Structures are given as C-alpha cells and as structure tokens.
Image 1: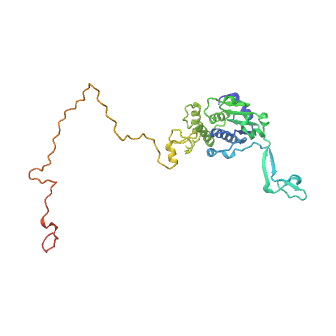
Image 2 (image 1 turned 120 degrees about the vertical axis):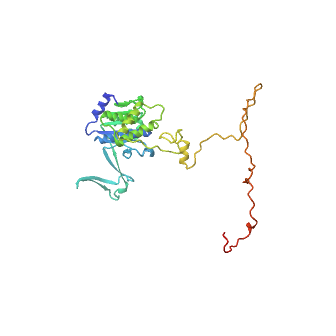
Image 3 (image 1 turned 30 degrees about the vertical axis):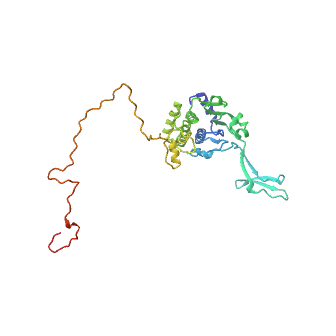
Length: 347
C-alpha cells in the first residue's frame, strides 16, 4: 500500500492502548477469514487490545488457519451480563454485592418468601456494550452484511473511525478506505497494509496470507492475476510463510487439472482415486474392422512393384553321409528289456 495519507490516518488511531475491532460479514470465503486473522494476529503481536468477530459459521475448510478459534460472534466487550434461565418473574426480593472478600466480587441474590433461589445451572454469562477506538471492516460490501454485529451496536459504527479493506470501489463507506479494484485478493491488500504500518507479516501470519492469496487465485492458475499477488506471495514465503496443501474433495466439480485446488474440485482421475476405483480415461473405441482401401481412380496406372530377387530356399534334405535330425535312428532290440547286473559287466 502506497497511499501515505491513508496510512498516516490509520497510524494516528493506532495509539498505545487502543482497542481495535476486526469484523467481517457472514457470507465469506477463505480469503476473507485469512486476511482478517492476519490483521488481528499482527495487531495483537504489536500489543494492541484486539477483537475479531463475524456473524457467520466458520467452516471446516478454514480449519488450518492460525487463530480461527479466536473469532467471536459478537463484539460486546464492555459490560458483563449475568442472566438466569427459567426465571419466575417477581421471585427475587433483593440483589446485593460485596467486593471485599479475599479479592473477590460477590453477588448475593435473595429470593422472596416461598420462592427458591435461582439454580446455578440456569446461569448464562455474556458481554454487551462494545467499546473501540478503531474498527477494521474486511471484504464487506455494506454495514448491514455484518448482521447481528451491526444490528446490536449500530451507533458504534458511526461514532468510531472505520477502515474498510475491499477490492470493489463502490464499497468506500469507511473513514479510511483501502480499496484496489485490480487486486487479486483481500490478503494481498492486507499484507501491503501491514507492511506500510510497520508490521511486516512473518511465520504463521504470513502463512495465513499465502493461504488466502492461494485460494483467491486458484493456486495461481486464474487467467487474470495481479503482479502484486506474485510479488507479495514471494515476500511472504521469504518471511517464513508456507503454502497450504492441495485438498481433494470428491463431491466438487472438476477443474480439468489432476488434483483440485480450493475453489474447484478434482479431476476425474482424482475423483476415481478418492472413490477407490480405477480411473476411466474415456478413450475412443478401438475399431473391429479395417477401413476399406480407396478404389483406384479411372485412367490411373497401379504403382509398379519393384523386382526383388528371391532368396534361395535352403534344402531340407540331409547331405550325403549325414542323418536327418527329423528321423532319429531306431533303438536296439533289447532296449525295452530289463537289465540285470552280472559281475564283470560294466554298466
């Protein structure tokens, strides 16, 4: 990223102790998740109090991304709410607290006469009231696509500066917009931003970014790929990043290659391997009869056959004084009679 004014604005908000949110929508690809996790892990590593959230389900195909378990479903982080399921309205008489018991904070819930105290098994805990100094919004066309995250904290998104990272120009709704229509992936944009902010990705963070670029470019096989994608992939590999393995999924459509990439399924060959059966190559049928010879055209002469002298056939008659190998000599008359050993006779 080379837009200096944008970089400086972001740096101004990334002050010491800043509370940073990274959010993305629910209808996402591996590129969205990898870019968001790389940004989250980089800011955590730099010492910022960061939170990452998405309203969507994280699918099994994302499982090898580092930090996937850190993605929350909501962004409420200010107020702790303690709730009781199966609560009977009007059954509580008083709630008091004590904060001077062995460095613990205690809540005492006193039920009304004739009612039981709430069952500890019915207690739920969760946070509300989000508080942030800067919000990064990754690959999301509009705020409404953030679902419950935006619905529950709508005011926050208008009170706090936002940085939108996207590949589509019509999504420039943030305070700062990092947008490049020519980019092949969100991950290459995020990698460039991290470099510009002074947090060059390394190790696992670089591996996440390579995975996103790999996915978005169909393992660098798409017809149109930005030069920046190749440049950034080289940098990430040099800084300790690793490419993800190729996965074969037998129920996805084939792409024509031997093994599948993340976006496409395997070829017929790979599907056959996954199904534990020999592959079918769909070869053309072998003809059972020879094609007819073309008829000679009227008025043309047949080709001349060269006069090749015949080699003499070797004689099968035995030469004078020799015995033919085909007619062996007859055995002696006593050949079939039993032989009896007699003293000096040598056998």
